Amino acid sequence: MHTPPAQPDVAQRSLIISIFGAHTKRIGLLRTAIGGGVMYLTVPLFVFLHLTVVVFMYRFLLAPLLGLPRLRARDYIILDRHKIAGLHWFDKLNCWFCGYANGTIKLMNDELDKLASSSNKAPLWALPIVELYTLVNVVLLFVGLVMTTVVLAVISKALGLHRGSLRRIKIQLRKDRYASGYHPLHRQVIIFYKVVAMVIAYNLEQIESGWCPLKHLEKEGQVLPAHHERFLSRDELGEMKEILAAEGTVSAKKPKW
Image (tube, rainbow, N blue to C red):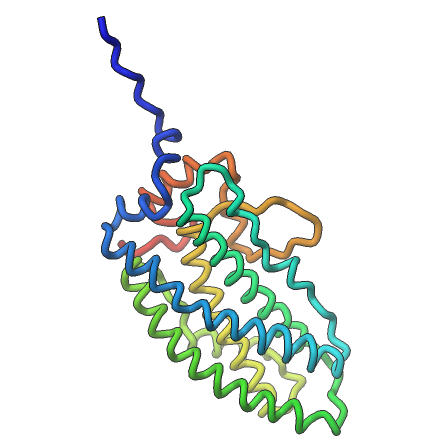
């Protein structure tokens, strides 16, 4: 008598599909394709922020002038989840994106906090250089922010994600007296950078918690965003995909659909 082959259990079945497939199962192909594809239009913004704010403005300009500590990029930008067995090639690409984007923004936020809390003052001869660079960079950043806001709005609409509020974050920073030791004009510039960094970090938490919610390999000196505490280990890959297919995220902020 012919015996039918045993059906794979839930964990084994879930390993067959990609994370993209898990979201397709939940909200359909069109929404998943738009949300998952459009997010790559934000890559130029992260490269811009990395080079202009993280590297040049903080590391090469402000850190030497104000005696600020230099934070190591390799402790923040961690690209190792593509090595996980059982991930689809498209999932691995998403993990590269999330690792770079989240690491860059976490690094930018921490550098801004170091700057905001510094009591050191730049020498008078350096102020025109700092202010000219900051003016040019803020203008470019504002243009990039407007374009990215549109892209993030499309992603949020497609995937049902929650979005960070520029206004609420700015009000909270003022209440917290963020960068209060600076001249009012300079403080407003620092707050502008911080608002941008916090809003992007909020949106990235939504994206990464739905697309790459896997823990990194633990190594000394790692600095990870707080939302990584909810992520699953590599041997829970099947369970993770089942969660994404059912709920869409491991975040406490569940998608609207």
